[in-house]
Length: 293
Image (cartoon, rainbow, N blue to C red; front, side, top):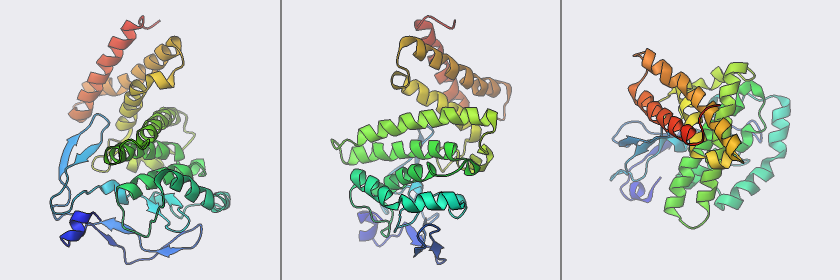
């Protein structure tokens, strides 16, 4: 809870009455959830990354629904989306149990002392998405880890952009950009998985978002894959020829969304308009680089 909310006696979140038991270390704790309504959320604009911004609340201070999305064990820092929390096999349990100390060491080397017994805030929110990425690295294809890592990486990048604004000059911008690049790769992989069926992507459809206020679903995957590829084209390709091929592939993928939007009135105009702007940008840059061969 923010200092503003505490000072005014306003509560943003509550602890669930039901116990949550960690499948890794058996720690019993009460999951934290955000209160709904009460004027807590003041929705702002939608960014080009499909992120919903929220205005700072005079009564409650900073409020972010993404703080409470992930289950985090406060003892061993095992982290997962609620639907995946207890759905582990013996191999996954063993790997995540063995890596508990490494998880804590890694997160505290970035964020400093991390206490998830406390109420969620900007720092714990950022930490939760880093922990989720690390834990999903040890999960099997049955839980569709790739699209979930993509979502966690882009949300983590948003958090570290905010952390960098709050605490400039400490290198959090580098973590932000690394997470964006990781997200670009995982979103591209998700596009391939959607065609190959190597992971049950439908198991992640409820959170493809990428934000919590609007689930753009597979349209969001197509758009974000293209958007992040454009944003980090210099980092994702080592030379001009590779960059051109990367952009051409991304443009062709984006054309599925843009083309389907023109053909169907059921597609939300917001994402189609953004896809059109991005598609035109791809055309311009590809032509400047010599055009499609």
